[in-house]
Image (cartoon, rainbow over all chains, first blue to last red):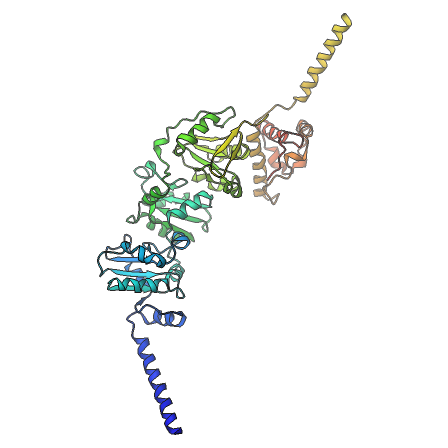
Length: 383
Length: 114
């Protein structure tokens, strides 16, 4: 009896060991990535795992028609804040509603990724894609963290994120990599400076001196390579916080629709009584009728700005203005606002001192009270 | 009658003299003055004399009369950063005076330096 029990135990052990060995050899994906996946995942992994080298080999700008890289993480805040360049967003939770985004050709290569080895979203989405009939589905299980660990890599960001940075006056150099005369001068994202990729070496001194500062490049959309080329050059120069707004200017116009254009450069402003000030009636008219014709800068602190500001105003607190003074556009009037005219006046004189070539600059001299909805009252200050 | 006229003339002369003394410092541009005042300390910090670019004396630390007296007597030692103060033009000083005076402690809009 005892001998029989020993024999049965050995048989079970042998069988288990053999089956385990078979299981680790089964997937066609690179063994290293698979081993990590098995070790760290507490869920059923997708059967076809690929590593970063595979993804890098298939990701291109623009993406090939028969390849799709899919970010399965939530759109907000994950995807908009940073994703692998070229990836589209199909959050796993929204997969069933967004299948129309998948390619019509069921033999296309689909690579899903999410937030690393402990993230199951990409695996779940890949399984769903296979059920839909897609035949060439992979999961980049190490996902976004491993992609970003490579110092040569940079994230792509979305229009929502770029606008949020502009609105809160983030310390960001936004760079338009398109040709200046043909593209930038005809319309660009507010606060963006022009460094055409073709002339990157000539104008690279316009980038921040501090190489740890945030630099975001954009150009003409997902098929445009210029911003990616400039980003690579900036990284080679030693910039450590580089991002690309790959959907670029077309996505900005669709989302925010507040381009700066040279078309309004001819706007003439009626001056107020004090040097550099704008006439109150003129200011109210511009804000009501053609707010896009002026570049409005709220120089109050971020906490004041967040309590309510004019809808088209960007926030650059007075203490940060000198560092960001290069970001002020030269192709449209710049108008500074604050609560009383003190800080906006200081901003005006700072521009006169630091960037005197900028001629079309004004400030609102008066007591200005702005409500959360963007409506405001403006009156002359006593004395 | 003659005495009354003499008294009135004396009073008027006294009044105009008093006004003249009060307006000894001409008015400048307070907005520009604020920028110049802060710029003094930024330059001073970059030179290494002070640790902060924030001006050490706020407008509301003196009354308007005290500011007038300070600038009339050109008593700028209290501000520190002497090389920067010495380099300011009369126009700059007038602008700074106007800024500090207009936001003095007894002004309608007393101000602190942030």
